[in-house]
Structure formats: structure tokens, C-alpha cells
Amino acid sequence: MNDSARGYHGAGKGVRSVRTISGLWRWRHNPLRRRTDLVEAWVALAALLLVLLVTPVIGFVIGSVAEDALQQSVKDQRQSRHLVRATVVRELDRSPLEADPESSTGREARTQVLADWTAPDGTAHHATAMADLKTPHTGDHFTIWTDAHGTLVARPLDSATATTHAVLAGVGAALLTAGIVESGRRLIVWRMVRRRYTRWDQAWDRAGPDWGRTGHGC
Image (cartoon, rainbow, N blue to C red; front, side, top):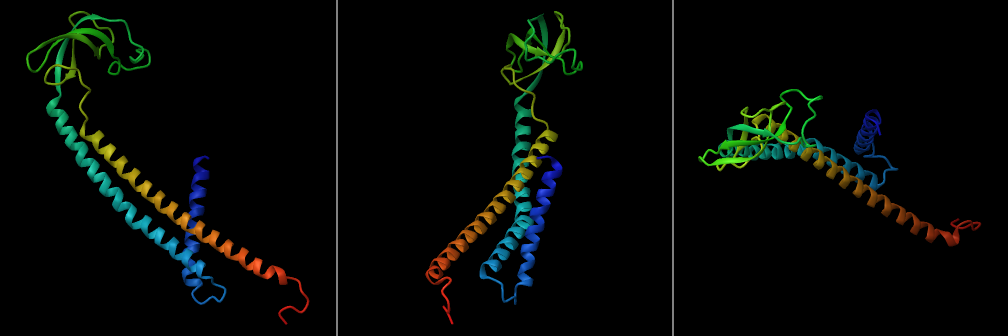
């Protein structure tokens, strides 16, 4: 389904909900109004209010909690991870996981090398590392991220990325809540319709033996 079709489908559901809710007023004194019609309208109104009022609150709360946790993680990583200067010993065979030098910028290019570096605690290390160099040569310098003992670690999470993840978490929570509310509304309506059909079947069963008899009910 393309975006236009999704938009049309979503708009259609919104229009149906509004029409159902409008029945709360139109059907107040309508002699043809069934009790289930009124209940269905109230269910639709309750679902709409939950989506409009509760969903944003849940999204905000989840986003705020995620923001606090991720920003704390940013602080912890900045304290525990260190930028260390390493020296190229020799270039190793290129790994298939490396970026393609023909399609990447110089900043994105990374090459697997054997390197030496000194950890923040003063210990010397001699191991494989990924250098942000296109054509590394022996003696070239590059930077890597390590923990306090010199073990290679990933780049620390930055504040902007943490905020983006928190926003996405809040939006996801809001959408999930709206989906749960809509699913609950549909389930309630489905059960009401099933019950209505059951009562109709029972009424037809009671009227069946006398259906079509001349003068019946006169």
C-alpha cells in the first residue's frame, strides 16, 4: 500500500469515528436508535479522547525517561572511553567489512592495520585496529577509542544522537498506545456486532415456526 492509499485509509477511519461520535447527539431522541448504537458511539468517543489526551502524555513520559537514561549513558561513556593515539606498524589484508574506498570519502575510509598504542593506564598494546586512513604507511598516526586498560571500544554516544533516539522512543510509544486503543475499540465493537447477530438469529428461530401463516398475529 503506497503513502496515498495509507493516507486515504487513515482519513476514512477518522471520518467514520467522527460520524459514529456524532450519533451521540443525533440519536438522543431517535425512536430507531438501538442501545448498541449509543454504546458504540460512546466507545468511539472514549477511544478518540484517549488517543488525543493520553497518547501524547505517554509519548512524552517515555521520551523523557529515555532521554535521561541515554544522556546518562553519554556521560558514563565519556568518562570510561578515551581517545588514544596509535601508530601504524603495517597494513593488513583488507576486510570485506571495510568501506569501499572508491565510494567513500576520506573521512569514511577505514583500513585494517597492525598498530601500537599506549593505554591510559600506561600499558603498551600491539594489536589489530581500524585506521581512518586510505593508504596507511608504517609510522603513520591515527586515533582510536579504548577503555582505561587499552581495550578497543566503540566511539562514545554523542548528545545529539541520544536525543534523536529518545524522540524516536517517545514517538514509537505514542503510536503503540494509539494502536492499542484502536485495537481495543475494534474488539469491543466486534463483540457487540457478534452479540447483535446472535440475538437476531435467536429471534428468527422463535419466529420461524409461525412465519408465513395466514392470519397469524391478527
